[in-house]
Length: 179
Image (cartoon, rainbow, N blue to C red; front, side, top):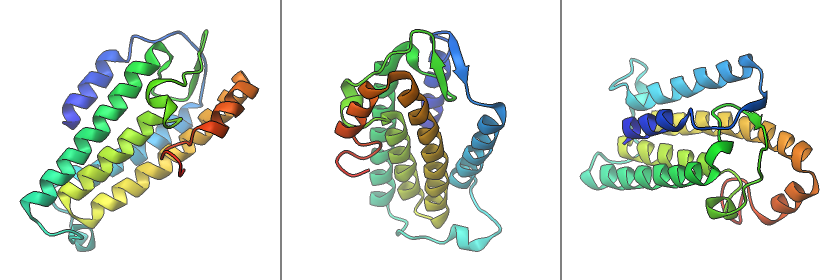
């Protein structure tokens, strides 16, 4: 699932508007390194640091398939958000030329549905793996996305002003009615 997701994301990455403003390269590099570490935690079969390999869920078919279903749901939610965002999307924090404030589709439920979907997919992968390192990967990704989200929101407030503030007062950032 993850390979298909990455391939899809890459295929659409060129179909975006011209960038008007982008975050510093050091910010992108730091985020990328943490994300790579998190994915290594999920995909490397065994670590020499044994506490990372300990299980928090039993190794049963039902735990794997439950995790796989949650992963699929998260990835699909993220893809839905990416489709809805259209040419305003970018991998890094940017403002696009003629940037639009998107508030429909999945953006009516959460302000950052791509992040919500990714976090759900990582949680599903952690459940499927059933080892503590999956939860560590989830925590790392959460911190990285939370920092990125804060920068994005600062830029959106500067660009859209009261319109964005009204949206923020109506729609939570990551989890409907909660966060």
